[in-house]
Length: 179
Image 1: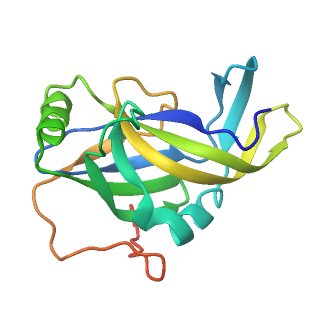
Image 2 (image 1 turned 90 degrees about the vertical axis):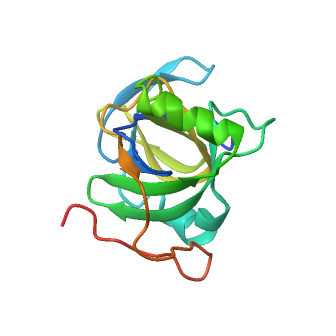
């Protein structure tokens, strides 16, 4: 089991019209098979596993393309909240060449997934042998073309926000998703 190493997990992206993409970045309770280079194993994220990242890092989490940290981010977090079904997030995509290209690929259905880069902080092996992520540090979220977690989907794109949203370490805007 890899500890203190940056790992990546994928999630689906939905339809898009504006410049803010949103959806479930990390679904809770889903089990998938992964291989981080140390051999395959089953993994699932539990509710609460991303709470510390929201509290301490939400304002620092950037939207990338394909985990390419050699390039500049294409967007920034505007919303991030844990719900019963997973970590929901929204990212404002910048009006740059890379940001515009990413939106075109999303609109064309080529890019339909989120993927997180994270460092596992606390994990446990459940009675069914699955590695359960109890606490992770999210380093970045990326747009990618294939999702690992079926429930981690981009739900859509917003054309405009109803009010100015900001994410900072002291105050994270919490939303009630799906209620």
